[in-house]
Image (cartoon, rainbow over all chains, first blue to last red; front, side):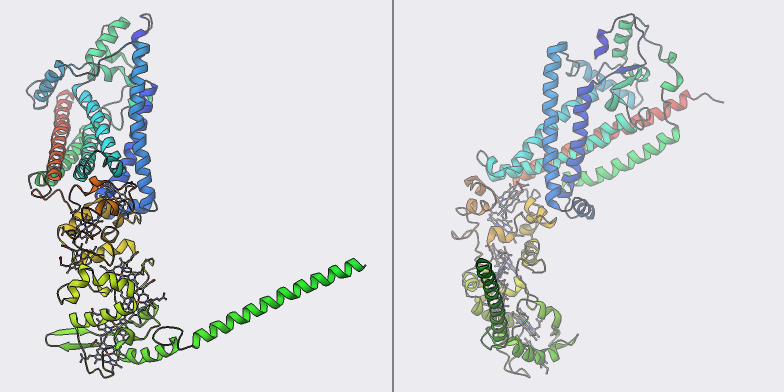
Length: 282
Length: 309
């Protein structure tokens, strides 16, 4: 975001900052806390499974595992608070930015993307700084943290929650907590990980989360409108992805790679649907 | 000089006194132990040595593996594991303290099944009067005494393997007692307990979580409709407050033994469960198909872009 203040005289750098330091810290805090929340939470949901016992054993007993769960939960909430504080300070220092808010264009983009995926339209939608999927994910994370945090505190302190709610509402929160965990997990490993890890252009990982930078070429491909705006700022024409040095652009993975990945995804999705659709309809 | 001698005498005197006391105490201890060990009054039901002799006679037949009796179509196992019995809390007691109605050897009055259970149960109650009193007023005791299906002491504690409940080998140990209850209480009660956080955590070894007996009590178990029951609507908050800091009246507002699968009785849980299953399926369909179609598009695109050589 800082580039927009750069003077016109410098050439556009090959790597552009997408996330600043604080955004990366928030994200890393979120990664670590959610990793441990899943690791220590799913054994409680699937207590009968052998792997659940193995994880409990790894933590040397339920006591420790449960403590890690509660500590990670607090860290997750802290990452949310960090984010809010960061937004407030950032708005104060750099003026408000609303690129993350949904707009009518997102609905058009979603429709367009759908048509592109089934082959009706040949070109991808022209995304701005955030694609409609990224915005969806962002608000899904906010909703997830709020719901998991709220229901988690209800279960952590049921006697306090019982000041204001009857037992059966506490139990509703338990069902929500236990199942929303799966919603989060699948959104992460199928949705989010596809875009930032398994997508052949990003594999094995996008670099944005650790150094905050996105390559010029990547930006041009995935966020052409933002790229165009930046290029104009730097006085470049906006279509010179190919004057990058070859080694700076990661070659997309081969077709065999994509084929294998496709098979894995199809199998995974079929297994999951075969598990959850019968439960839904039962 | 004078002073030194006095001091020396004092020190020797003190040392002598200590030694004498020490020796006396030890002797007293040893004598007490010996007296108790051989005294026929030391333990209810006779001395250990005597009991062991008597038990050896019983075990000469009953500790043979495969020792059994055929009654009609059923084969009844009469084998008693000697080492297990001797390691149990009653291990030094006479077999006859529990089996008092045999009528000697060979037994003239053998009984089995419910009758045997009742017979032994009377003996347990006779020795363990406090637990016995609570038990006799409980649903389990009432049912058993009335000759209906109930639970005998031995259903929860075992028979020849009884241990203190604090011993992890005991059937009534915190982490196992719920399984004992669930031998008999199956169906929704067991299903909901296994699903609940309390049950899950016990299963995974969390001793602070609630067992069936924490909520229902051990011996004075009563149906929830009974106002004296620990789980009646009036008493339930107090029961939860053993572990949860506040006895909230709201704790009694809802079914303890609820499962989301029961649409009729636990509708609020059922509807939340379905909503979230819907979200899960939506998630898989949305993210899964985007990933799959993106990969397909990319495969097609790379083929188009690969220069033919």
